[in-house]
Image 1: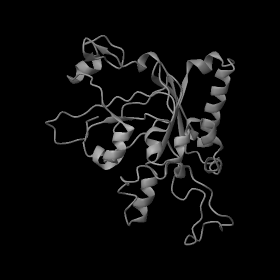
Image 2: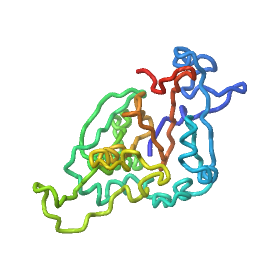
Image 3: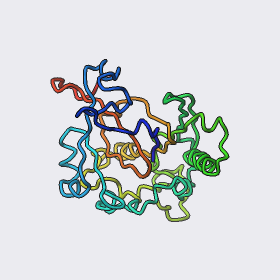
Image 4: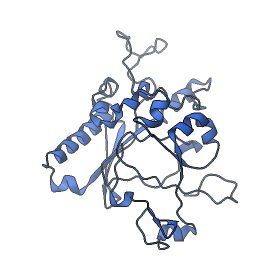
Length: 268
């Protein structure tokens, strides 16, 4: 559910070569020159092909790829996720979900502000408060009542842990937990059925409770306005992820280590 500048979203081919996603003239991208590489498009796979091959086979290729859906819901529909009906395309749905409402007092979200693609501010607040503000700004833009300050800075809710372990739940083994007087509410994770089912997280399948809990900390939602971005980074603890785009447009740029390197983790 992340936005980006419409002009920078264009990925055309120039003279038979893949154009720079940053909009630089052919052969003039300073980032590519500094690394001694050229931009290349990731492999595109149809959702039906991904369903036949399976997540595990695709992931073992070691190369980035993009799965495109030919029908509403795309791979989410083929994998039987509830989000295939488009519910996560609405920030209002995430804001009003009972799982989010239960965590109104948890300062568990970071919202970055961006100007000219560079971070200009950062706030820590609850996921509910962050989604509430993003919804307010969206409604203001639709009503053409946004102020100059609102238009000048673009907000980005980044890596919100939408399904942390033991969220709002009590444990009978923990004497400090409040008594459970009602059944646990539905969780946002139920909408995606735990992710790619044939490719479970190794931490999640561990017999160690601490590792099982850590697995839930790797479940993130990103919601960004047009013009927001994410700084270059290396995923934590050697992890990799399936990223599903619920709505809007997003441009991913990935740097791969040279083939002769044995260490698969790029240097900072």
